[in-house]
Image (cartoon, rainbow, N blue to C red; front, side, top):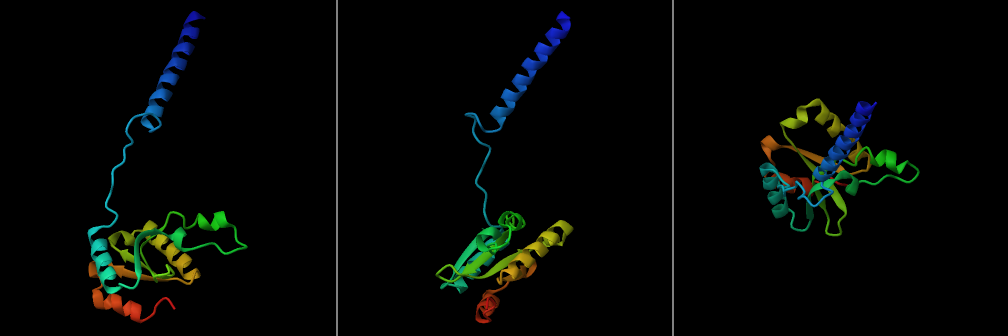
Length: 160
């Protein structure tokens, strides 16, 4: 009986020690948090961003924008259900007029977009964007548009 009691007490103490150690590792204590600053844009995204800013001086060019910041859920629909479908998606770039009206979004596709999971995500993003009446321009990273191609998108008024 004493042995069983000793084992139970030992297990409880061990459980408390494990819980305390896990709390310290989770960032709740005084330990430093395990974060570092990352670059927001890949090298091809940086090239495209600078080209777009140069060609579109009368516009706002935003990078890495959450889709849920651009698209809203229409009244009469379950906000949480529909917002959850887009809340982890992002556009590579969003181009706005000076009053921050969204003109179009840009996706820069690389080889990762060929994977099934990624192409399913792309289809979901395409459908949501189209439903909102926002044009989505897709360019391939292997053939980045030059300044003339970017200018042609604006001149074509693709957001209308």
